[in-house]
Image (cartoon, rainbow, N blue to C red; front, side, top):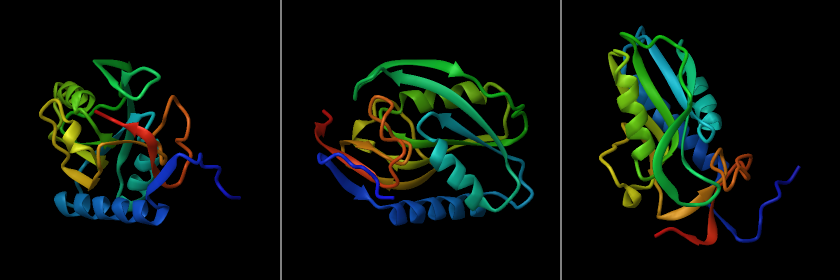
Length: 182
C-alpha cells in the first residue's frame, strides 16, 4: 500500500537512509558498552517510539526498556520552553547505564530536563541517542552522544515525528514546505 504524503512534504531521509542511521547508532552503542553492561533504553514518548523499537532490536543484546513522556510543545511547530513530565519511568535505574532515546534534539530543553531528572536516580551513566540533531535550534547545553545525522532547521515529520499529532506513521522523514523554523 502506498503512503499518502501531502504535496507540501519534501523527503529528506528515505526509510533505507533512516535504517542506516539506526544501525550506525546501534553499532556505536555496542562499542561504547561491554556485552554484559546493564542497559536501560528509555524512549521519550510520543515521538521516539518507532526509533526506540528499531534501535533496541538493532542492539542485539539484552536491554531493559522503559518510557518517559514529556512535552514542551502545544499543537504547533514551536516549543513553549516549559517542560512537563506526563509519564515517568517505572524501572529502577540505579547503577545501570541509561540510554535516553529521542527522535530529534531541537532546543535541547526537554532532553536536558529529562537527563538531569534521571541522574537524580543514581544510574551509572545517562547518554542520549537521537536519530536527528537540529543543532542550530539549540537553546541550552545538550549534546547527543549517539546521533544519526544533523538535520537542517526545518520542521520535519515522519518516522515518529509529528505535526499536531499526525504523520508519525510515515516511513520516511519529510521537511514540511513553508514551515521553516526561525
